[in-house]
Length: 434
Image 1 (tube, one colour):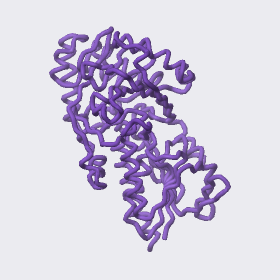
Image 2: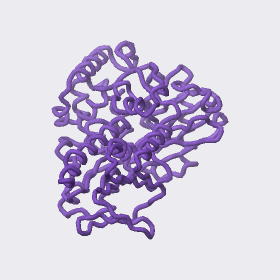
Image 3: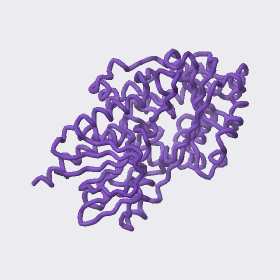
């Protein structure tokens, strides 16, 4: 019997555990330093709300086969809510819908020829399955060359700067391809929110006699005589196999990798995300928009999404729920602001988007910062991705670096979880049993 330790209870770690749950002859343990599972997709629970709200905006595309498939497998298929949603763009003090070929043709902020060019390129990307050729050019250069400078300046540049900050010009076009290629206008959400979904997956894992250890902050991990010693508080746990389902930067701190491995991969960068969840007494995006891209680089956020324009507000005590978010490098001055100061900074900007908005609309607010929320993806990134199998026998690593070119998401995390589980089942455990 092998003892398998999965470090991290986010959706990747849960995915590994879920796809290993049939291994009743082995012992699986998920170790999570928080008192909850779900990672970036964890939620905020409030007594008056029937459902928790995700700390960071989450939804599924209808093409997310892993996430939707597992939901059905664990008895949550009837909880899936699928709707046609409206996405818009705020630019130069005005809002215009931008979520379909028809809305693009009417989009007022760029020239007609640039609308046509943008639409044709997006149509081509939807058809093209070869993403690797896109990683040889930056997104900035690709968009300017094929969609036109007008489209780049108005639509795309503000979003890249808001997403990647000082690294925006480095991002390869394969990431951009992946943002367009699988996208669906219809979105899905799961009843109870993503925290409920994560908890349900965790329950299914525990039914297989696997363990999930919460509130378990690891001090260090040692490799000794082919075994892994995991130190949590004053206790030591021993495993035959370890899977790091945590950000690369966290794994490199927890374990002393060989020098060459460390030097090769410690250069990979990642930035953080900060989000407000605001409970409002009135609807903010009262034109029915669910997702609003904020294409004004003077604003301290890049998007506003009104959750209750997608999900019925009855689940949230009939209040209106919005997310206000942005990705930031850790040396950005906005990353240093306190919650109170940051809230005061966003309020006048929210009023510019909706002049009727008043601070008194905010019933309560919740602020979250996540480190390592978005990898930086330079040219030819596919050649930089750390192998899942590390140089240390029976030590594996799986995180957002490995879902390239896809952006962060629960569907990709669960896909990665299955990939790691299959490596263990088809190779490592099979060899160990011989």
